[in-house]
Length: 191
Length: 286
Image (cartoon, rainbow over all chains, first blue to last red; front, side, top):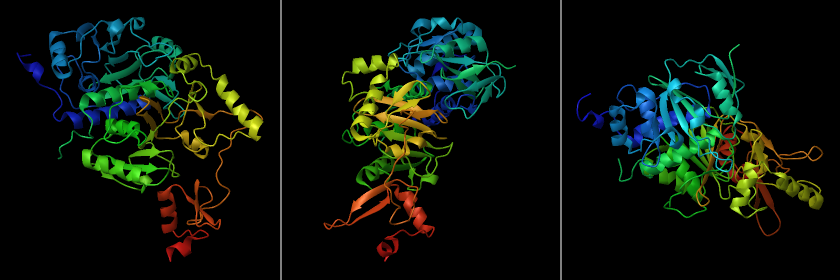
């Protein structure tokens, strides 16, 4: 990484790139288990294209972002700050968190909303080594009958779903693909 | 392209709305507060729906706007023109050809598909508002799932009128948790709320956004002995003869003559062009 490289890798045409990116993010959140392509940004490593694009689409000075584990590097901080102006915060204050699953644990650190404002909860972006339409069985809003998605940790995500209508919402990213798991989804481990 | 940012709103406003939409989809039926902006049209003209549409539109979308089912009313025409001008997107009046449909108080008769999105303009998002005017209280009632008062209201309908007389904005329970106002659509449209498309609701003046993902379970509130009925006028469309569509009653003169026509203008037009003729159809074509 050379000096000044944090200025690179943003959206080429912000309103249009962000509109396309949001459509993909909204579609996967509305249809848990569906995997879509998400491109637009070229973030510094270790951020994937999908995670970097999602951060540029949703984050700004109003949203605290938590960088977990190996994602908390100077390059990522500078890139995110330059392109979004989002403050970097600790897990309990985060609106968005990004990291590998093991570095995001324990989930209990993140905000789950309040009974009167369940929307005031963290959105957790999990970088995964693989994203496939198989594994855990999903049911609930947005899913016709059932769907399958490779999830990192079924018991922890089931515990999150039991908090409904409170709880965190998840995006899973891998390369330039993205899927989502809102708190409303019922999860069954693969048998 | 033109002198506006794509779809009028600035990017930070769109991000704020987009975050609210995502939380709304994650908690179906829950009303997410958002910082509604002043739009270049008065409240009551669909400022909530316009802001939601502005946040989700992409340049490839084909946009349809209906007002009570009609594409050709002032409200629908001006919102369609607004996005033609500020987003440069294509528009259509055909339900099947639209990728995003903004609606005031109707769901199109044609079944919506997986790849479509419907945006509702909502005047009063809170279903409990006319039963409990205080926002602090209704918020608590939602958090405690305390919806007894809504059933009392429906019961009072029955005790006064012999049936549930609520004809529009008929309350529904979303995914077994939140009671939601489906915006003032006629209750005839309530069964269509379980659909394949993504449903987004925007209330500009009241500053709320809520959502229903596809295939979400929607139950219209009722009683075992007084079940929910999706009612419409007991007529067929006088132009296209449709017996399955929601009808508007039109007064023809001062002698009591009236006609019933499809409220969904695209549905009626496509039926007529397919050769269907209603009671007064030929006469008006002549």
